[in-house]
Length: 333
Ligand code: AMP
Ligand code: MG
Image 1 (spheres, helix red, strand yellow):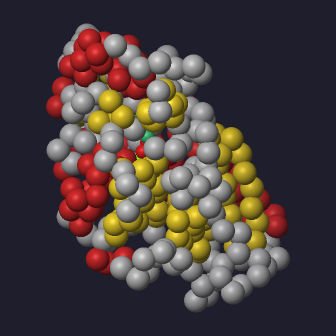
Image 2 (image 1 turned 30 degrees about the vertical axis):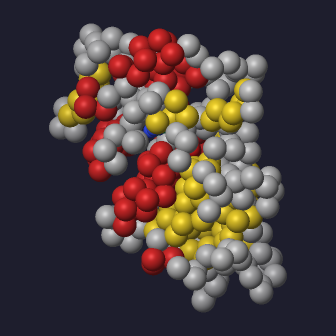
């Protein structure tokens, strides 16, 4: 979707205690404005390559549908018709928007897919950024409200009620793409794989019988270092961080995850990592938990079955859900 500076999560190349075996295949492509790495285990070269090519192709297709940066994508057409009319879109767009609205509701609007006007105003794509004037932040903020987006799954239409509104799926689309890529691999006979769309990671099965996939959580203040690591099988993990896209002005870090309540970068966390049954959910919830901060963020994820979180607060303290206590390896206690 847009350029990500640093890959959020380091995917370990070796499972603990286990050397990389010869049936591991790994390929990387630049898609959705970021680095996508697919790892497949337990298949012959030709079968693994065919499956990985199909999975990359699926991500490329979804990027074309969901990108904010094209007038012809579903998102481009929805945004161009804001305040004027509803737009007919693909089933995939409906699926992502419906989940985005569910998380908006559950997070009390901390996650908001209509964040587009604020994202454009802050413009983290541009170098030499400056802090926008207060009045402009306020003007953009009045356009951000997920309740002013209507999604009709039966007619497959989407409507933005006010002119100037813009949908931005940067907080959820990569997770959805990881799910779809994993599903594509499965349909091609893969039962063991890891799909990493930057910091949105889906594990299909285990790495080998009895050996889970091993995923590192990026340390929010030490580039290239891990905060701790998790073992996952048939689950997803996403991290949102203030170190991914940001600029520093007068000693203050201004980053890309915005609090819809203030129109400014959310200030309660340095990073939020969420484990969930699907990547669309871990992605949306990691963004929401980041905005909400440790207390409310942990409360939010605990209201979802099978979801856990690790949140680093603004002071660098680490908070984990009770279900993960003692399970984040290497975490300094
Ligand atoms: P993530 O890295 O998944 O947390 O996604 C961050 C991206 O989501 C940003 O670059 C924006 O495109 C978008 N975004 C920023 N703030 C929000 C928010 N409060 N709710 C939903 N999406 C957001
Ligand atoms: Mg997210």
